[in-house]
Image 1 (spheres, rainbow, N blue to C red):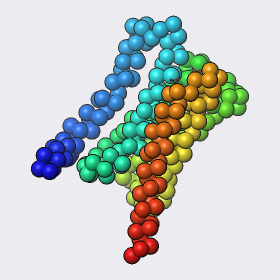
Image 2: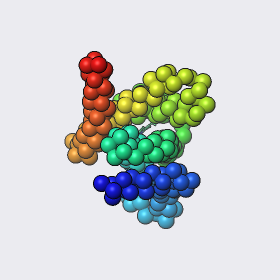
Image 3: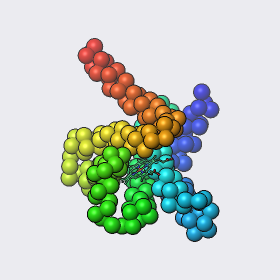
Image 4: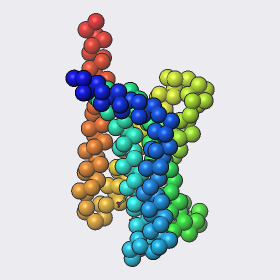
Length: 215
Ligand code: HEM
């Protein structure tokens, strides 16, 4: 028991420390630096453009899962200071989607806006990816304290619940992209993780509602 309290206190103090946020950004940006180095050193394989687009998409989805796992972990582990890092992980996810979009627009589409527009209309998985990025953009732009104040807590909360739509669209994007190759193993892993995280929130909401009704 004393050990558990000691562990929580240690984690709480570490997460409250001024280096916690820079450390998250440093660790979160390591894959991007690794990919950039790979592109410069030409070690990304036969198709570097595809490797860059796919790896940045993978990291965006991983970070989305981590951002959505922060609250369940904070509650189940009993470490409130974890909440301090949620915005940073969310912004890191957004950063990877921006690099992903930039790699696609630049390396696949040579930055020709007309071609990008036609691709959005032609390939549904690109349309779905764009949709999820537009929602993420709105969430990133309103992730700062000034936006919470100007929107009001209730409206801000409603807007930020659309992160689950982003998760659903991102998995659909991945699913659609892989459906051509009938390769769904990785997609199923991400879908299962996101279903557990969403299920946890629904379960908590139902539990608190039934507790309110009993009172
Ligand atoms: C901004 C709009 C987006 C565009 C234009 C876009 C475009 C693409 C393209 C062209 C591919 C590679 C297809 C191929 O190699 O055949 C891809 C793959 C992928 N994208 Fe996106 N995407 C977007 C948004 C997103 C978002 C928001 C996420 C996740 C949060 C995401 C996650 C992924 C994943 C996981 C893959 C598959 C990587 C793999 O095969 O390992 N994408 N996307």
